[in-house]
Image (cartoon, rainbow, N blue to C red; front, side, top):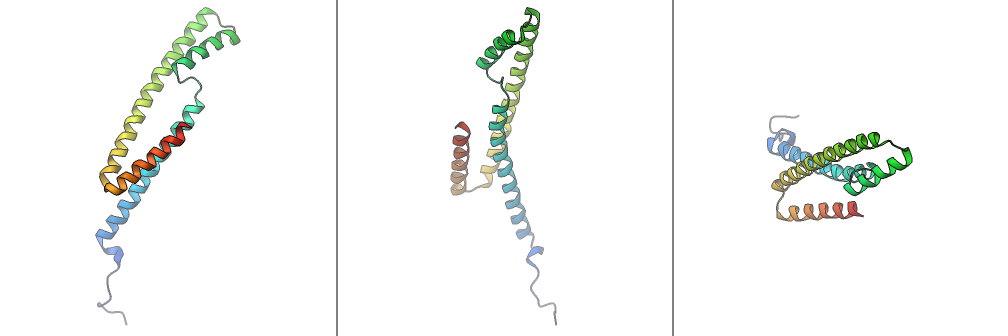
Length: 130
């Protein structure tokens, strides 16, 4: 016989639900930050003309291998400059988003967790540089 003396389900306790939801959200945010960092590394490797020095090398190579006229070379130079400006703007925005996400995560963590989290990020950055 199940009467009213049975203990209430823990799922009905708002504190437990809030705690589980918080853990899930923190995990999701950490996953997003980690994926963004790893995708940034892959994206940078896939885009051949993202550095100033490489832009000049690319332009010279285009001129030589494609036998560009001076007008074509000038137009491509403008395109490469526009691309670099656009890429740098996006990069700055991505850095800001990452920083904001990191700051938000750190506000949730205690000192011990924060230290581990920063160590994890440092390890990810070390792997990315390699």
